[in-house]
Length: 140
Image (tube, rainbow, N blue to C red; front, side, top):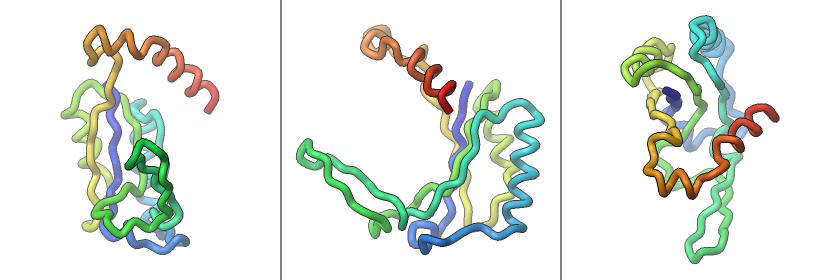
């Protein structure tokens, strides 16, 4: 089972474009990331720049509309993520509990949808998706 652990740092929604974590926080996070890797559960890990450098594309009338960050209405934003592969939701939560997060950070654990989770008509509509994923993984 694949799970995405999402880092949600409070206040990041209004962070300046050049905001970066400190060396001490990065060192602690690297130890955690290494433990995930050594356990063989880490599939991907990345940090994200603040929302002030991002853009949102919405489709209010069926046409794309672009808004540059920061996003005033945002209450929670992502600061980074881990993609892990474990045996259960409980195991994913146990890994999230080990994260060296600060008091202003939340780690949300969400299971990744697998093709087998969908009914047959949806699987047919998504024919070729699994192969597309495999090609994308090879390209990265």
